[in-house]
Image (cartoon, rainbow, N blue to C red; front, side):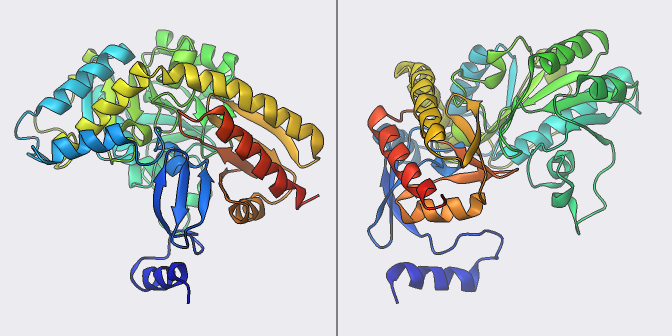
Length: 398
């Protein structure tokens, strides 16, 4: 039995069977490359699902984590810690929001945002103002409020009843959204790009509708930036590609570069409803995670990674469109920055498996979409290798 198969067997005996892992066991990586237990090297265009924004084993991130681990890992939120304050200062400045709450994950950030919106609604509009509107095909997490907010009914099966107070409208349907607003609506929770829902991009008309609702109906706009934030779309936050001025945003994934961390950013007038004792976390905002986050934010700025994302988006799109003309398998190419989706004419699960055989890691989104998530510092040579291996993969389905 191979070493990889041995690890797989051991894992199956002790880990719950909730993921379709196959026999993929990885031991180490560097940059956009990752190596399995058999010593085979792969080009990684999954990046821990938009999390490893600097790729694998970034020396600066490792040093920041190591230095903090040797100093102070955890104190609890009974006390202040310097890295958390510094990271919050940076995020507030860069987002034009006012206050930060640190959590441990994206779903926790969304749970907190939902809770904050409802507290604001009841305090300012009345006890019945607790309804939150979300979008069909959205994804906001796996804990109960975040999962209820997720507009994918198949994810709600056999675990109901789901929480009350959530309404779903078709993404990009401004008419349906406006008709759903009433006096009990406290917030709209939305993604600029539905990363798990098919790489669906918010339209200008829908953006304008959100702005109009925000101005006229006293309803909070919460933007889930968990997958799109931290430079993934070519700006630090995806909403900065639009005229939207959110009341709350949620972050995770790329914020820690692989270290678990989530964040809620909110305007002062809303954040005040999280008063002492109204929300909390043991691990959220610990010195280790926030030191990692601080390094990530600084690195994105100092290495001008936003410019790299925009440049590599243009190059990657150019190469993908060329590949599209050479095969009848790619129906559509969409996305911003380095969050791209290829809608395919063949089963995406088969393509992912075949790509693995060709030394390439990719993942999927809904509606038979191949999702591409390279690290933000990906270079042209790596993109060329990606195109070569993807072309080889797709040729197996012609």
